Length: 192
Length: 123
Image 1: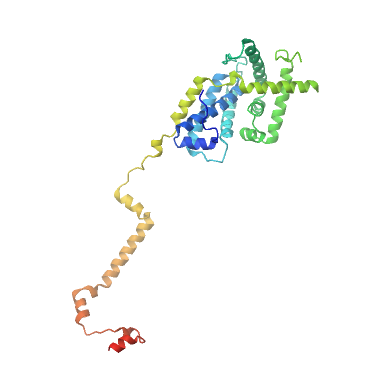
Image 2: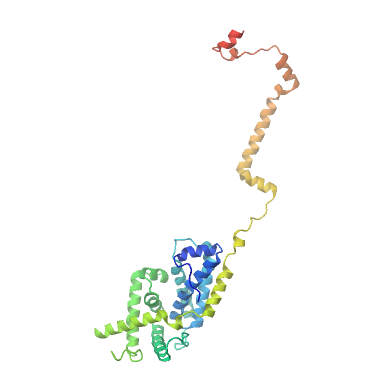
């Protein structure tokens, strides 16, 4: 996959370049943002096809917004995650009961089959557990612990206070621990 | 307490693995589509540099003069100068000029300023 050649350029500046018709900025920004929005949508929705739809929708909204983007006013990623979070919430409201075990085969064939199986099983267990959380808890946990975002950023994305974020992530993590406690064998933690 | 620490460690491991998990990675096909979308929605340099719509001569002149205010001021100044021109035109007619050349009216600078000694001497 092509590399981001604008590593030192901020998302904001790239978006301005994009709006000015710079095609290499379009490429760099797409390479940089697509994995983020897709990854988040996938973790929240638990389905690759739906996550692709959400990611595509969110990115198109960003492209359409590019010409009116006010540099320095909001972080591109915060804005984008917020759009993704809202799109995911809409989808979850409309269609309850996404297939929890619809985890596709790993695409990376460099790992050994056994490792891949183990990895898949562990990640499937995590994804199953995430799907059992209430929507808001799941979003907060994914943003905090998988995307590695700060609590103030999450607060902006989810349109809630920082304390509410702390509460959601703490409760979410506790709930995940409770769900996964019964599957420690499966997760390869029984020998320790 | 040990159980809690164990579960915290397990969760931390799972979260770390989740970042690189293959199922959460974008496929090449999807990335290719997103790259195409980004270009398709991008403002083209031709659009950005497009010439402003053509305007008529009078409209351009009107704008150049500064719109209603500028044009109004210019018209008022023009009318005022026409009026001044007409009202002071006597001196410019043939009779008027003749009287300046041959008339018996003599004007000296001293008439206008009593302290102007040069003209007095010339007299």
